[in-house]
Image 1 (cartoon, rainbow, N blue to C red):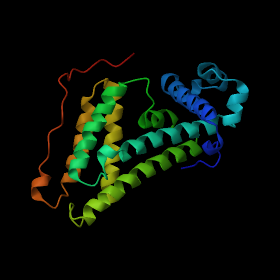
Image 2: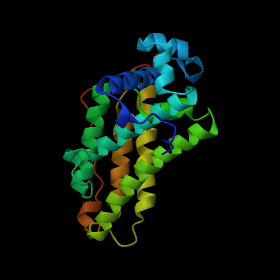
Image 3: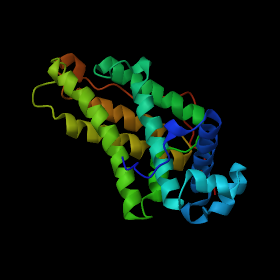
Length: 231
């Protein structure tokens, strides 16, 4: 990821790190709620309750701030996949648990107000080439993490020899992001539930054990009513 011009967190005090994190969090929320064009340093300064000198201390310009937002959010994504509950994420059981944790996370954050990687990609993808490169680098990290996990599945004989770890990782990330986008559009969880289930069922098609190839149905909540999207 492009991080050469980001402030080195290792040099910050605990208070300084907290201030920088607050600025990044508030900036991400402003982008998602009002759009990138509405983000300016004066509005951010007021929303984050910091001075102009503090903003300049942590971020040289708006582009550096945007890259910090993207870097922070992909770290959230990668940390989610590295959590102990998912173990090494190299068995079908682990991927079934991945579905459960994805849906729990969606229910916890709701459908607005919390920055997500797909939400930021949608807002920032048209800004400039450097930002697009940063977003792409984040996706590359995510794909590589899953590719390595799927490679281990193949190495351990869980998947057939002709399974392509990179292509499977691309399918999983694409399905995840598409399902998440539609879940936020419809204000309902079923698009994401269907998408992550499709991703894991597609992975199952390459199982060495024929019994593991049987597709599983999506997990549904009790309330599948489609909530109207916010105006």
